[in-house]
Image 1: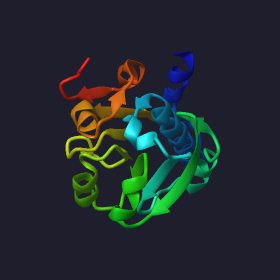
Image 2: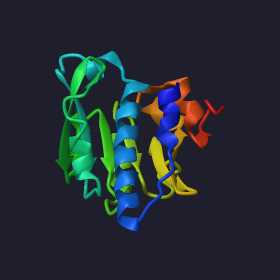
Image 3: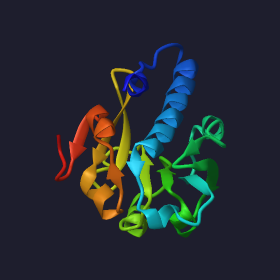
Image 4: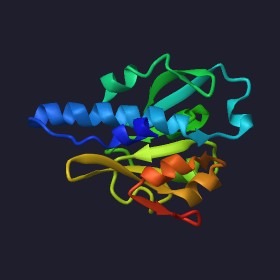
Length: 172
């Protein structure tokens, strides 16, 4: 649990350093999200890798590459970058970039066993599962449990307890 609390470290320093720290923290969050979410067995069976994907442009490509080879759910993480929604259907976790239209990906992935994450304001209200936010220079997140359930995903109570906001029928 102490390691989970480290996720909420403040983002301070010069603007460039702060941005790099923010993206490093977000990459670490994505890794830990993958550890504290349970996928349906059918989404993991016959897969030798855990696919962490991006859709559209993201600002932390290098930081995501540092996750390659780490093990989650007994599978090594691979990072894949896509620009078309239909390409992310085989991913386990998809970070949807800031400039990417959210409507089509969320509609397409709504009942797929894919953890959707984004920085975009209002993401969880539109059906995304986890939304990053900066609050008082700290990386925080909110969770939509109804969207997770629709995707067949189970979110750990430890992860739910760290969210600044949990919406859905499994609110704390």
